[in-house]
Length: 251
Ligand code: BGC
Image (cartoon, rainbow, N blue to C red; front, top):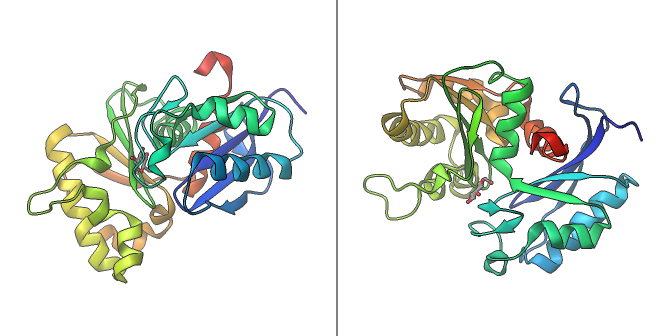
């Protein structure tokens, strides 16, 4: 396997997706392979699915993994859309053991944001850039001058009049669960975005995750001061950024 090809795995609440990435260009060079996240999404069950994704690629080498939780030194410190058993689990250790490869684990939104910062719309930006992934949850990666502030978890803020965290109201899973049109969901997402805009005044907000592919359907609902753009990487940023995190010098 060429040195610049690394396996990136994006672990989500509904799917575990992998792909081989040319980390010098930030490009997916294989097909994307996806298996459904087992339910309940326990460490044991997810490690098995993770290993099956690795096996699909017949891969032996360093793996980078984006994981939907607060991650410090490979250990999960939260579990919003996965089983609570993940809290305090060493995800890097568990996935390394299950796959037989060295796995580096970071927060999934941080991974996707890094892809955008190295290769996408965030590249070369000196100002405040916020990357949001919209899927089962809402993940965030905040950058200042290209430097990541990890684990910001901005999907977990509270909105006025809501007694649950914002992602329960504004993630793509809320649209699906409640059968909302893109326009109705877009109005909700706008409430969320305006709140975040008021808190942080980002210069650029980049949207990733499943909902970013449908940006044209809700773009007109977004009324915020910040410039808002869908990621050009569609929802591949998570895999690409994860692979980049497996390069020792970019950790
Ligand atoms: C998790 C985050 C994650 C986001 C997107 C949230 O529920 O708390 O860690 O980045 O979902 O997957």
